Image 1 (cartoon, rainbow, N blue to C red):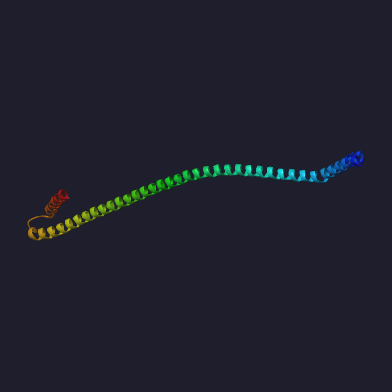
Image 2 (image 1 turned 135 degrees about the vertical axis):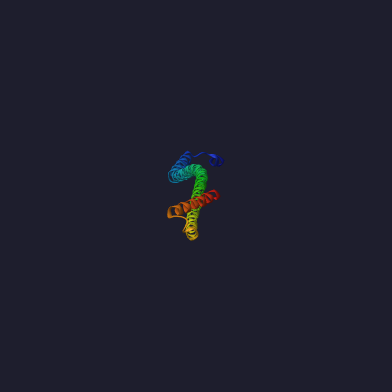
Length: 171
């Protein structure tokens, strides 16, 4: 019978062992699985938040990229517009300067022509006066006794008119 004692089943020991196992399971579940599950959930939430932040950052970067791309396109267009406006403005200014210069040159030429004309008229009058004076003096000496004063004036005026007509045709 001793051999049977070794093989025999002790129900009390099985119940105590099962109770110990259940208690150990409940203790491990309460003190180990709960904190581990909370830590794993916290890590999962942290990873999810990081993915969400990364997605938002990627979305913002994409929006910023498109915004800056549009700004670069607009900047290129604005630069071309500014260059075109500056070129047009420079052309207008150069045309205005050229026009002003031409007007000033024309005015200078007109003034020079007017001055030359006035000097020519003055020279003609001076020459006529000298001719009249010389003619008058010469004629008075030559024919002083032969002509009276009215004939003398008429002769001089005819002479001056003929000299004036010949000068007008040469100019």
